[in-house]
Image 1 (cartoon, rainbow over the protein chains, first blue to last red):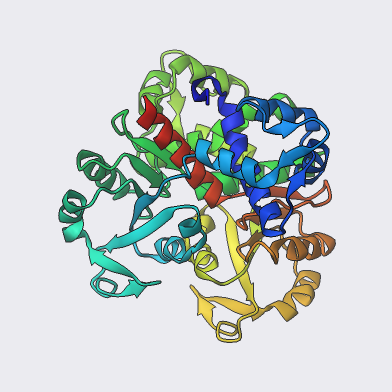
Image 2: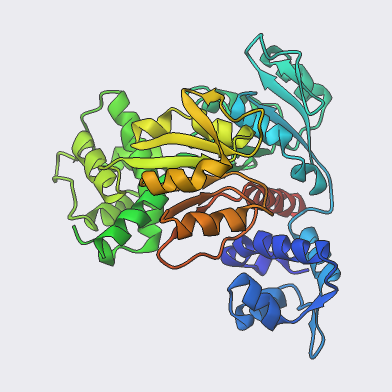
Length: 211
Length: 211
């Protein structure tokens, strides 16, 4: 596996391949040609062949791709061949939505605890996951190796909490607060900025209006 | 305003500029040099000058940028100088989280109704917004010009609902279902694929592990 040479553009496309192959697997599809996959994904067949050749090329001439094998190999590349201990900071609607998302479990992302400051929420459970007090966070991080923390708190609170998480050894931050986090380089931050996404949509809508 | 010539990469950066300038406005900052803005945003000053020159360049030598003016001009480019009638399809946790996000109002995105099939939710209100039955959707779309529909239903339901929305004249779809939607070209789809985002995070985490 020659990961280091893979371009960012290819990496950005991999989750989508993984999703499509997972859908095919669910439908008991055993193999698929690059032509068929290309029609489903609205990507050229040559793009698919090129992308997958990055990983040694899983296809066989005249046979196509073995769906299960390709799905599993791409999963390995995406780091899905292991389990992740995940926590959620903020038990508001968004935190609850993430906690309720059973699909994450299936991919190996296990939400083990949720933290909040709201006394009405502390002690309650969401899909069997306990909402703990923020006061317990430090102890929790000392006793548990947490891989990923999802941050769903207001933007004013997010930077401080993220720094604490980084200091206490969390290496993966999934940030939903509408602010950028400046953390040490060994911490990986993936942002989901909903408002940015909505503004891209409004840009494209108003661009079309002008045509 | 010469929108047509602006590259996609610049467009992708605009919401972030808008967000930073909004934060500065909240702090009553009147003007900022490209150097200061660059330090805050971790982007080179020359990148900032280049990006903003696309729109005629709002800066003055030795003065810097007028924060309020630049914020408002970028807002116009992003289509934020008008109001959007938005609805949410799916009143689960994610739909509720979106409905509760008061920041959308401030940017001109007004959620006016939420639709669901769950009889326990229909008739209830979320931040004053009524949850209506999916059976009422068609009539609602006939009587109201809806600009954007956020889809937060399971992936098996999303394509059918999206087609209905498109057929009934909705031109903007904000899709949270983990599936791609194939819609007519005059419909703009912006996807928020949470699981793809999480997989990018796990990829980057496992890549670091190998270093």
